[in-house]
Length: 187
Image (cartoon, rainbow, N blue to C red; front, side, top):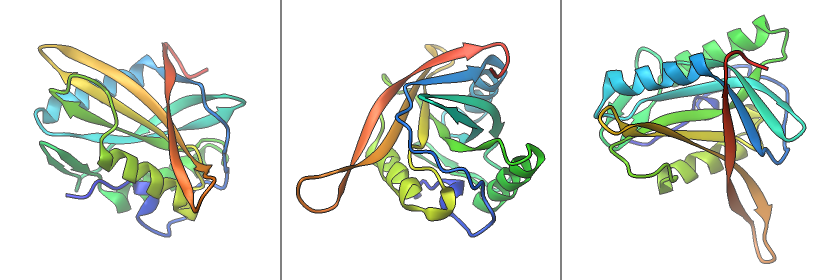
């Protein structure tokens, strides 16, 4: 199963805010983190996930909402594909409701029984695809990995990516770890 992001699936009107900052910090509401953990537990030992909505301010991102995986999401032990069309409609709806302030920031998904929150080759391919998808308008997408299990507790690793210039041909995917702070409410 190919893992794809809702932001790369269709031509539904997505947020017009383009961000290309070097994100160093993410503020994540505790309620959103709890929802991620509940989703991971509900579908354990299969992967699950969703989309983050929020805004970028200087070198930090503020997550304001989570878009669930959708009713037709597909989950396997080593793969997850959200219900793309449903997620796109939800992203567009929340964007409009926010007065075009809250935008797509990236995705999260679980890695059940993993010993770390490192990105897989599939995860890196998804990040590259998000960056190259014009309609996503997200040149520095976030990808959060919720890893572990109910017996070992879940941990969260957050990454940000961009395409960096090479001295030769093309652009290389540059990925760096992002510090995440759980907050009671969105900042």
